[in-house]
Image 1 (cartoon, rainbow, N blue to C red):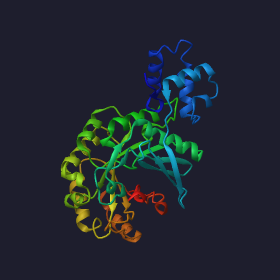
Image 2: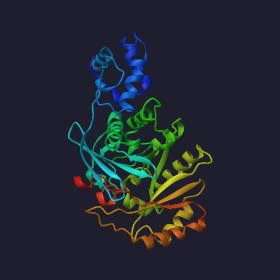
Image 3: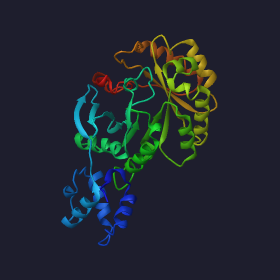
Image 4: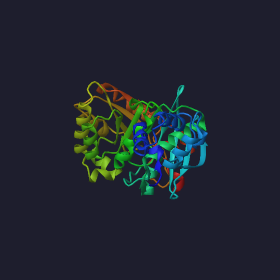
Length: 345
């Protein structure tokens, strides 16, 4: 039997593997010790875990692999955020962004190398899809960043490279590992999964018992503009997406849904955009998260001025829903929303 990737597994699955191979005969603590060592102490080898005997280390080494991504570079921005560049085993590249939130830290992780969706405002989409990541490759981003930065990552957002719901099995397994209380202990309530609108996957998620939050990349409420910016709308229509969002919201009563809206100069900040929001975004509670476009080389889209964004969002206030303007962290190091993968173009 070949080695099993340890970082792919929840603690319960580690128990199952060891039990199935008859390796729990000297007590089940070997699983807990190994799990806490890798996910809590950031141990890179079983031999580095405190309290593990040589015999236990040998058993673990004969059963599991502790494969890791290669950390190639770290780029610290003026706002203290950091862009981490990782090399995959097959030569692909993914990036993660560590973001300070007051006294806490969130990590924006990638779920794919590249992306197949080709959104016009996103550098990752210009790369095309190389491949989806395995659960351990997602988990290892969190482990390596936590170890390198010397911080506890207590929030994870799937807003990096790739469309998470086109890799839903690996993403949900990674979330299960990340939230294990004997490991990294990231609360499911502090995990956000951003989707560009893979409607069948949204419905599957709504019917599940997952506790992470979906965040929806609306970008524009004018169907024609959204279709121009997001080719996925040719597959899943605008109204189909809005219906899926309504169903998701209904499954989580008394909670607001977050809609991500991209502020683009001379495109998404007009009177018709306000009219479309008033017309289409009804029947569910939501927060409109307005993100000014981050510049991407090779794109003809332009970033609006702060005053233009402020004036437009003020006109939304009378409509009665919460509006936030979110300035992306790490823009000066190409770590902002839509900028990941820009150095690979």
